[in-house]
Image (cartoon, rainbow, N blue to C red; front, side, top):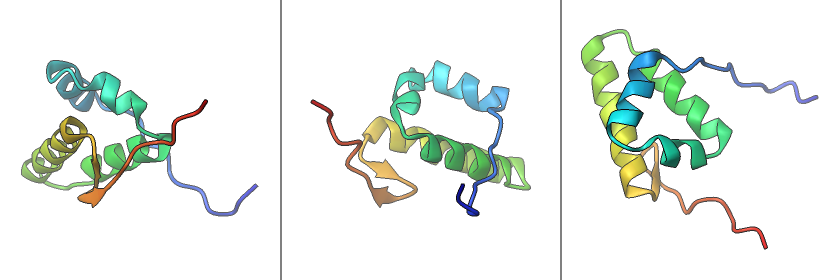
Length: 81
């Protein structure tokens, strides 16, 4: 086992609701587990609700675009044959 492990963050209802409301749950679920966990942790660690909403909006916009992850280019997972 690797000594480097990420904290696993549970999905809060407000994020799940936003994903469903914006029809982005499937796109979220298609992302690698580390990205899904990073997004949830990043959003929930914000101290102010205003910051949480800003981060949530960024995640939703990146999922819509499909080629961004935390403001970085992301080309998706390699296709398996």
